[in-house]
Length: 457
Image (cartoon, rainbow, N blue to C red):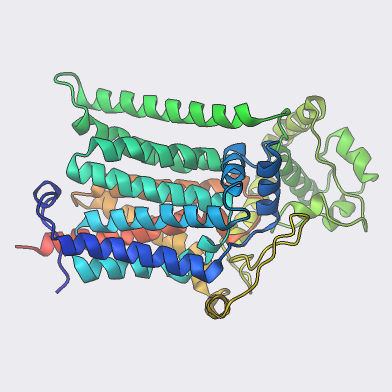
């Protein structure tokens, strides 16, 4: 019979050794199977660029430098993607094991839940690739497992250790702060019982703790990335601004671009912009062939300032065109109205000067055949997880489960993260909102645990 443990503080000292061992073995099996399936790890062009920077120890901020730096250090011991593949999978499977175990599932059911989630195609597929999206999500998965342990067992050590993956996840992506803030608030709430002071307003105390933790982790993570830079900012925001202005220009029939972009285009015809624009991604506006003239990505602040000024003056005057464009981008990213899913996962290692090769094994071919058979179905479409996540957040909001606050904050982390892409999405790749996909499974497990706890005598 499926069983759920008693209250955390009753369980912490009486959990059967078999339950702990089952969770540990399931996580170990997940790590071994995933690494064996994709060894030495997949690398896209973004991955190649990050490893190149790590090996040279020269970084720009197009990709946040901390992950490239860490990869460069690991690469000196384990060359290529294998070291990062193992690191990401250890973080993910360890965090998932801790999370499921501390929800109270017993032995076989705990092991089954861990393996079912980790090997579910949309989760399993992305554990193959060294991407910053994956690094961020694996870090946050480990942080969630440690925070749940800290909450259930009053472990100060688990709470302190959880700050490390929270910090690393913050460094991995420019927009990670959106997903991190709800998790940091959860950490602040847990800290009140772990580091309690008598007296004072508990709400004020929780608010101050949350503000301090958010500021501390955000400032230190941004500072670490900035410290590693050898040059000024690469101004990655410009790609989003240009995409918006091109779309509004096409929609309104008037050219809304700064002079340096018009000069680069060599034309004032709005119709010429249609050759460069797609809601699916921003890359065609900037590369990768010479069949038409494309826009440059600039590094000087004067041109970026003119672009920013043009965006700020144009978008408020044409909100309808802007929202229509952003809706098209978001629909594409969510897999709505598309016959195929936009890059559901990567396969292999991108050819480069690094001379890294991927040789498929029988296990790898079997895994890729399974993933390929479902890649364009609903499992890899973002709208499904957006609907599920929204519904689960509402269920916990209206419910009274003991894990209600934790579930709401985890759910908000995934929900706000995916919704924020409405305004900043640059591509329709499935990996962009993989953390939101993972949070769906965490909330499903919390829902099952809550129902079973409520049904106990």
